[in-house]
Image (cartoon, rainbow over the protein chains, first blue to last red):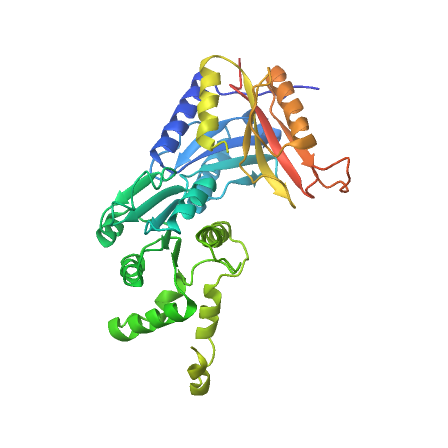
Length: 284
Length: 109
């Protein structure tokens, strides 16, 4: 076997890249490592070379890809924006690169520290989410009850949610002790970029709440389409732990783009039925 | 489960103490496979491996390639084919194929 002529990055560059990568992961700053995993023809010397790309600074490291370099780095940045680790191919697949996207783990915010919140926190950690629990009652929101959570916050719901840096990696589950609190919190996060908002409550109850908000606060009905309420997928859950599983299953379903049916799908489907008065009356 | 951060921290340690290791990364998958694209594993010459690309015979192939890559320094691609018929002899069968890129860290001695 002949060893292709390669132009490896010197070890100190490798160490620097590794240090920069670790620091970015540490800071929760999105970063992608690009590695040349196939290099033929004029590009043979690039095999194994690496570079890092960020969203907010210049790339680090050189791939030795000459005329392709700029395009590759631009495409890698695009992969980082889309948060998709992927292979990129150039020059009739003579050159292939792997883009490894590092993003901080998603956050699960559990609003309410009651009996459903405990299994939720445990399951949230199990699926590698950062878990935050919020409740305004310190006797519930404490680390004795939630040793597994990354943060337990005993403070009023609305201001805490208002100040929280909610982003597209944030999953919010509203399971407070009372519907009025759930609804209050819902209004706080309804326009946020959160990836997922789930709210506990029966189908009948949830529909009534949405009706009320529409009539009394003039909130357009479409706005509630993003809300997973009743929360969870349809597995017939009864106990708090089972409800925890049914909610976390929905979180995974949204996170991974699965195809499981949500309990809230029925509510969304109802909305698209023709609003014939006799049928509307049948909606308990 | 081994997080990306944990693996890179370990990798940085190996690099610091001048221990060449191989890093295997799942770069492409077709069909049903045990782990997702981007999953990594560190292969250590004395068997102090970290992480998993799915276990079973497929992983054994990757480890073998890793040991070779530590010796030779030339990165390579390993195709792990998990499409054999399901039988009692091959319980690791998932039905898909994954491409695993195996490289040495650091690339040069």
